[in-house]
Structure formats: structure tokens, C-alpha cells
Amino acid sequence: MSWISALAELQQQGEPCVLVTIIEERGSTPRNAGSKMVVTAERIFETIGGGHLEYKAMELARDMLENRSQDTRLERFSLGASLGQCCGGATVLLFEPMGQPQAQIAVFGAGHVGRALVPLLASLPCRVRWIDSRENEFPAQIPPGVEKVVNDEVVDEVDSMPPGSYYIVMTHNHQLDLELTAAILARNDFAYYGLIGSKSKRAKFEHRLRDRGFAADVVQRMRCPMGLAEVKGKLPVEIAVSIAGEVIATYNATFGEHKRSEQRKKAEPVTRLLPSSRRNQA
Image (cartoon, rainbow, N blue to C red; front, top):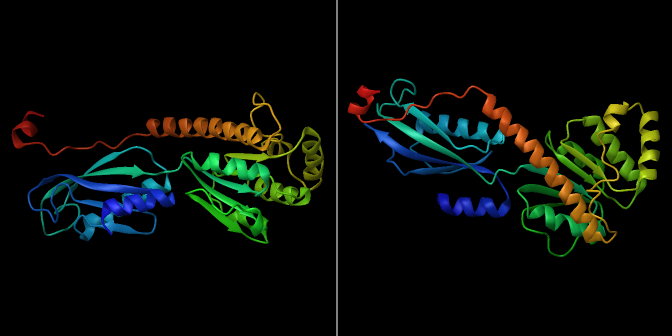
């Protein structure tokens, strides 16, 4: 598959990747400037020449994916000295993150509010897993980029989400809501947890969670009622808009803090390949 076809397919699937491009070459190199490679967490498409250079590029790209980096990056490689390749030249690679979701969201419940909410979340830069034990509750058409999960053991799906995920619980069963809440709070590594319900439901859950040994500061992280208080209404779409607004506000704040943290890190200097005259001037 060509790199451009791979990008289109990955975008449709909602799978993040890094586009690696040779933007400058000096001396003998395995591929010319303009050559591209697409790297995902498990696959590669096209090649920038193979060998140790390609291995290092894949390693760096996958590190960017793991850290959800949104920034482009330039790296210079000397093929002889540092990589042990016989070409002996040098090259500069551009790394461009593509389709990196800012939030990974698990939505538990395919009822009326879930069916109104999931299409809204699917239109955002998020990866959504929509989970329910009832196959017939899902609509015939699932929004693009949304993974439908039918599992009788719904609570087991909590462990399949990565750290920093967003959880939204709105099932048809209060006891199931409680078990999901306990599993999510036990992880305590989420960016957001929202539980549909009233203030009285929250009070009952807080009491039961305290009986199970959960600390007050952990329980306090639960959003219930969830959604923006400014968005009024009881229609499923109104509730969905309220919840989506709160999720957007949360991930914008979280992503902004992540960006500031990245900027505070000591950046490695990037050496551009300059003509010899300009290198001497530098």
C-alpha cells in the first residue's frame, strides 16, 4: 500500500500514525529526498531505505505515538558514524504526527443518551469505544471511527483502556453503574469520569463507595451529575451536548497542560545540513 493510501485508510479507521519524510540528503544515502514512510504502533507502509536508519526512525516515531506528541520533529542522522551503514552520507528526517487523538473515550451504554452522544464525540479528535452488553441497542450505522464493543462482562472493558482515558457511564442498570464506577475509581488514572444521574444518585453511590473503602478524594473525582450546568434541558440530545461540552473543556485543559509540559522539557538541538560555505560561517 502506498503511503498516501495508508494515510487515508488510517484516518478513516481513526488510527494515529507518524509520516516520516526525507527532506534533505547529503552524500550517499539509501533513498532520495521526498521518500516517505508511514509508521503506526504495529505497522509500517513504504520505506525510507531500510537498515538501521529506518529502524531508528520507526523507534522514534513510535515513541512519539506512545507519548501522544502533536509536534512535528526534525532529526539529522549521519549514516556512517552513528548508524553504521555503508552509505556514509547524512540525511534529515521530518516526523509529522497524523490523526493523533487527544482523548480516548469509553462510553458505557447504548441507550437514548448514548445514541445522541456518540456521534458528537466521533466528530471530535477522539477515539471512542462504545460498550454495551445488548447488541440490539446499537443503531444500524455506527459513526466512523467508533469501535462498537458487545460484551456480557461490561466491567472487564474498563481494564482495556489506556491510562489517561475518559469514561462515561450511562447504562440501563444502577448496579452495573456502581460496579463500573468502582472499577474506574480503583484505577484512578483517568482524565475524566462522568456518571449520568442526579445528586441523590451521587449521594447513594458515595455512601456505597465509602463502604467499599474508597477514599473521599478519589470519589470526589467522579462527575455526577455530569455535563455543563449552563446547558439546560432533558432531551437526550440536550444532555448529550452538555456532556460533550464538558469532555471538550476537560481535554482542552488537559491537552494544553501536556503541551506546556512538553515545551518545558529541554529540547534536543537539531542540526540542519547546510552548504559547506554556510557551515563555515556558522
